[in-house]
Image (cartoon, rainbow over all chains, first blue to last red; front, side, top):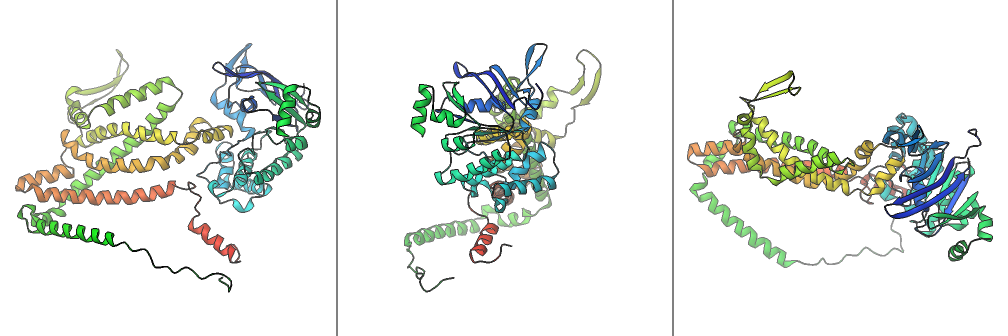
Amino acid sequence: MTAATEPMVRAESVCKNFGALHVLKGVTLDVGRGEVLCMVGPSGSGKSTFLRCINHLEQVNAGRLYVDGELIGYRERGGKLHEMAPRDAARQRRDIGMVFQHFNLFPHRTALDNIIEAPMRVKRVKKDAAVARAKDLLDQVGLAAKADAYPAQLSGGQQQRVAIARALAMNPKLMLFDEPTSALDPELVGEVLAVIKKLAGEGMTMVVVTHEMGFAREVADKLVFMDGGVIVESGPPREVMANPKHERTKEFLSKVM
Amino acid sequence: MSDESSPAAIDAVPLRHPWRWVAAIVILVLIGLFLWGAATNEAYGWETYVKYLFDRRISEAAWNTLQLTIYSMILALVLGVLLAVMRLSPNPVLKAVSWTYLWIFRGTPIYVQLVLWGLVPVIYQNIQIGVPFGPRLFEFTLADPNVFWLAVLGLGLNEAAYMAEIIRAGINSVPEGQTEASVALGMSWAMTMRRTVLPQAMRVIIPPTGNEFISMLKTTSLVTAIPYSFELYGRSKDIGVGLFQPVPLLLVASTWYLAITSILMVGQYYLERHYARGASRKLTSKQLEALAKAQMGEPHP
């Protein structure tokens, strides 16, 4: 496979268990370059865990996960897998942006300082360049005027947009969104989804765990429905939503739509 | 600003608090009586108090006390951070070492520890560093130790155990999401600790640390156990015993302790304010000013 045709994310029978609790029971999927994958499903179905496996916040127990052709979390040597050194795991995460349900902005830093922190400390970008890029990103998410505000002084929607800018500042090749609008007041959901939609339009590869079915239908190239740690059904969002094949998918969709 | 239609500002009669006045007067009278009694009581020796308050030996002793406090707190802070991070690290060896240290140094009285430190030169006459059963690389004698640094060591190593617990509580108070966000950005564990977790933990760490600092200032009076007696209490006691007037010299020492404590409290106030950044939605005075200007239609500065 050449780099151009190789998928950005390739999951092969990914399993994850916490002790006796099996959260992922063999998830296999591909996310192509520039593709937007939306994952839906009831809570506890394993979609967030799968997302956290992609950037190795959780360690995969079985199966293989590749991002941009590189095995995540392990190194294969002489036909045997070796646990990856923390430094190498950190290097892999640098290129994978993540946006959390509860934003997780650094409360002791202003919006601007939140954004320049990782580029300056991790990538050693010069301060001038990092600040210029951060201001540009804040402008893109519509918060140019809030550069000096602390997270506690921003609304939830504004915080989440700063968090997206913070992830983008590392120039990731892949963006992961873990229920980015679930903690927001209904009237603030739109502004965050608009930013994500714009990113999709610019060709960013994204995996989005969401409950916003309208958003998924509009933006996703592929919709995955998960339940009980496995993918129950997947396909183009309109098809899956209009003609769900499985009983569980039908039941779920009837509740959320 | 206020136009015809806006209602007049409320001008109500404030609530009266007569009992507060009564209590204040009673307390003032009691204090006055005590002061009168103290001023006329010969045993207080006010002349001696005034004479020795700024005595050279006393101010030097106060300086020694302050140095003991600062050096042992620096030692305690550095070692405390190390012990707390070790305790929270995923490494079981480091965890066990930290736990054992705490168990010993927190589980025995500081006075006993200080006496033991004083006896170290008796237990170990000299220290050699080298390869076991091999050549000697380095050797120094403990026959005539510097008692001041022995005191710093004794105070600092004991305090480190308490500081470690304070710092651990501070680190645990930072939500897990903060670590996750940092790690997801590609930051290492050490950088996450230094840049994300510890600065936020400071808000929780500083008030009890200020407390420990002030407590340490007074604990230095125990180093006579080593024995080191050039600090404030030891010096004042020695002079007082020599004069057969212990009370005024103890008052001199107390005055100095109070003065130093007051200075430390000011420092704590500014530190707390620094680390409270972003902790509240409340706008800073600069931000409020800018918003008020914006409301009045003036251009943003």
